[in-house]
Image (cartoon, rainbow, N blue to C red; front, side):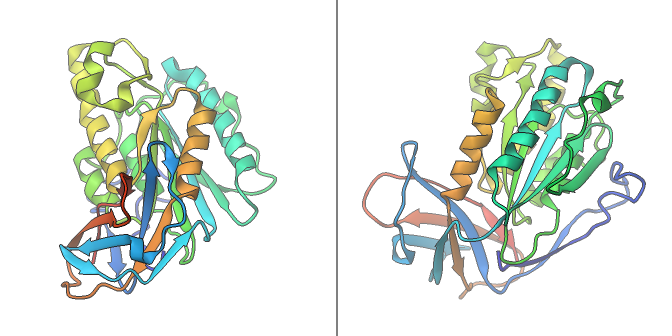
Length: 311
């Protein structure tokens, strides 16, 4: 993405990438010359191929823009895999997450890069080298006082990506946060400043089957864990903002189900999405830019794209 994005890197201190300081005000600093928008176009569940610039209509702050270039999966990927919820009652999911990390490494090309971010009461992230050993299962056999889901997701979204590469964040989580310094309600706005597309796979939720329609489709098919009404309300305070953050980037949320299958679906969705580029005209460069993307070719399509960007 040629939007030049410099990120404040004081998100996590040198002391093991711990939680954000309450005094910090995490932001993304951006300068916009060319706007790049990742767009997924499907008919039913089938990706729509063969679209060109003339097939897209992009409005920036309501003003129609000229799409200068449409690319389809030409740029190398930076994939950030986030594994959260490292608590005693989710050990099976932790083990599965480590298997997903190994599977993901086998599904990316030599030009792609993989980062693994482990989130519990602290945040650890590292770039996976060809000889990198996926963290041992023994490392999570410990009592964890809290989980910093929101801080971890922000850390993943804010990871700097070089121009000319695409950033995909895949987070496996139960959306349960007990430890973050960053307020969950701020995450959607911050996500809107990131160049990444974030997809969420939900390990589990504390809600019963009858409540899932109200909570959203991410609950359907996810495992449940026992909780009180108070705990459910606390869970929703994190769950709703992180789902909103994913949608704001143009990503999805789904039950983890088969973790490997979920991963394959997310990668397929991302690799078959279009990359639109345009130089904004007729709009004030400063402030938040709402984006609206349509396909002008006749037919019924499902279109998913980022909701906007910061000028």
